[in-house]
Amino acid sequence: MRFAIPAGRARLWAAAVAGVLVLGWLSGVGPVGANGGQASTLASGRSAIPASGHGRGHTARRKPVAKHPEPVDCRAVKCVALTFDDGPGPYTTKLLGMLAARHARVTFFLIGGNIQGREAIVRKELAEGHAIGDHTWSHPDLSTLPKQAVRAQLTRTLTEIAKVTGGPTRLMRPPYGATDRSVGTVARTLGLSQITWSVDTDDWRDRNSAIVAQRAITRARRGDIILMHDIHPTTVNAVPRILRGLAKRGFTFATVPELLAARPLRPGTLYFHEGPIKTPRTARSPKRTTATSRSCTRAAHSLRCALAKRGFAPVRVPEQFAPQPLKPGNDQTAQPAQP
Ligand SMILES: [Zn+2]
Image (spheres, protein in one colour):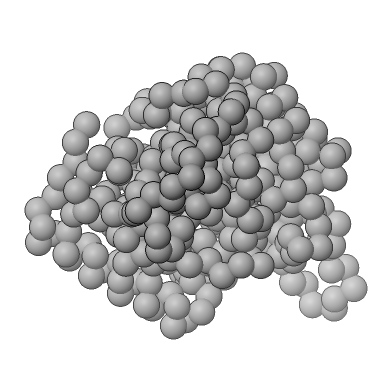
């Protein structure tokens, strides 16, 4: 499906989003009002996780118990960030219940076209301490689009998120992990950091909760960002097992901004892991190359560039992280069931 908007409207949206971003930064706390006073930035995902530290029984006043305790410090504890793409969908509310039961917070990358009719779910995601990011309006491969269309895809969803939640987000995830210099430039101008992943559960392909859970649990290492999709019931049903399994391995669940808090979250920059760039664990045999791509001589704003600088042939993110070479599209099958 192609998405196009007139340039004039695109400019209007861009202006609206820029205004919201500026206001958000000025206020310093992000959205207000729409969350009933919830003071969290959509992208900063403040508010935390572990079940301990919850109550404040000794306080004289009857303050409502914080839904989520202190922010996670991933320098001190072993963090992993679960991420769910392509929603909100029919199973997202169920997922939120599962996450709340274990005080686990995650990051949702939303398709703008799926928000309509599910605004309350998006507000609930935020209110429960999760972080939210922009996953475009209709899930195209941004690296195949002209800049103006990339901007329209991102801006339209940014505007929708701001409308629904009252605040901006500073995260985006390019569909299929497909990005390039041009996408990076647009993301930078919109104030968005690009977030991909370091562990792919392939949940779109294997609609089997046991397999998805096993992959998430066994592949996770400290600082990983794990890719899943909350539009698949099999994935959602795998979540309790994933939470139990990872907690048993000593992990704390963090939002992406918490995971990356030790580093400045720069607009346009691509992040896929908490730590420095490293050789993907599941890559079969990455080809060595001596030349760094000419297009990568400046900042490593794409994973492709970062890998090229380390001597690996530029390939797409999904191919790097998949146990077998995949066609672009492992980020989803995922044309969501709803428009
Ligand atoms: Zn996606």
